[in-house]
Length: 149
Image (cartoon, rainbow, N blue to C red; front, side, top):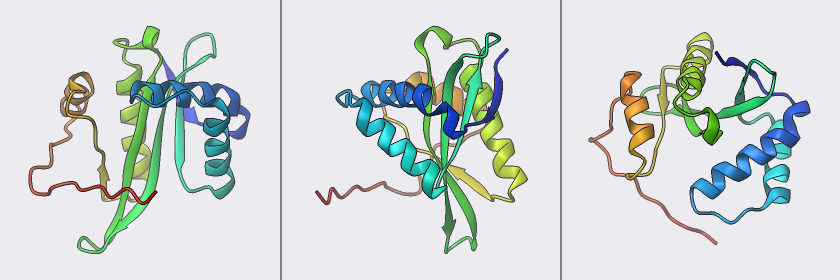
């Protein structure tokens, strides 16, 4: 069974590899240095919360990253669960579920009213996991994107 804990800067190198793998899953080119810089910035600015899963051997097998935010309409805090990634060889073993449950518990401990996430329409495996944990698909709002660059 995976152990879930808060990531630290000491996890930077392993997290860099995981983040690069996560980005490649979403058809982004590998860029280890950019992934490392991005994570170093997250740790430095303390603008996200990262949880990692460790296998019985202590090796990091996955991560989840949450970004705090607020809702003007709800007058409360909401966190965006932006990233969930588990090594291929550790999938279907409960690691993703454990990370999601730990993220929910962390949000609960911080008085967060709602967690939100988006996933690709084709990512049916992730959708099954989310729905099995009680997440509900948002059908009330459309999502829009605007690329600035």
